[in-house]
Length: 306
Image (cartoon, rainbow, N blue to C red; front, side, top):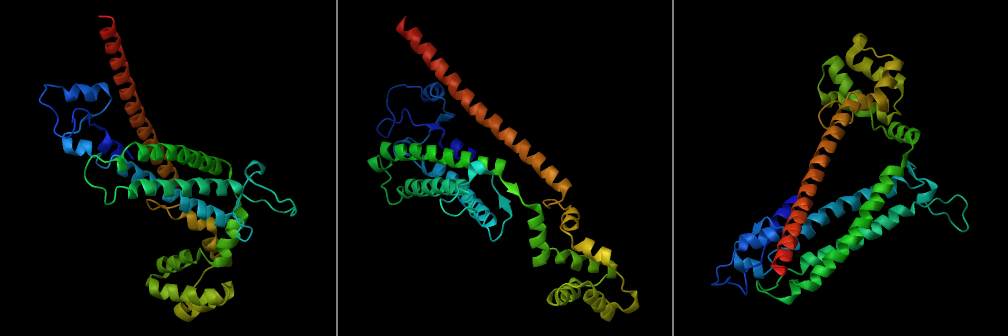
């Protein structure tokens, strides 16, 4: 988004019909009064509105596409068949006939706005296709109003998503149940065999896979170990289930980008740092615009009373 803003934050004023003018105008001064970073150097590019809405549309679509995927995932996770996510009463809708129904309609309202915005922004971007590189109406005021109107819907979608993140509740016991039932943590058991017995991962993977096929039973696992390592094989039942626990699986993944508590703390710290930097940059843009407007208003008033 910052790149998009920077790419279009150039003032077209002074380009005139296409070739600027023979009068000694100061385009830099005009750009400063209007809050732009600088004048758009190529005057032909200025009159054909070069990508002025295309770049912002594409950037915002990238954000909305991510939101749409997250909302689809949350819808699946909150379904009665999965039951990982719950929502409070103010974000659900009950049925007029089914007492048990708790439909998380906030997800639907967010999806409607995301998909509507995606379609409108896609039309804004698509309209630049096969349009002559000239000053034409197709990429003029009408498409601008479509873009600006869409921004209201985008804002609504983001606000709804913020409410979802704030208020959704994770069913931790259900997460553990699914993880253990589906064998999501068995990779760590295979890793532990590599570390403990110094074998290649392929062999370890095969042994754990055989154990999974036979119901992930501890006695079966010990038998498989004995067949491979003989008397030196050893792993208590407590150690076996501890390695397979969700808590252990997460705890040992301390690699950069992993889910351990420490790495997540570091990640959140960096995200907050980046967010604050982005807010400061946006504030700088806003202050620049306000300063330019104040300067323009002040000098205009002086002209009126001089």
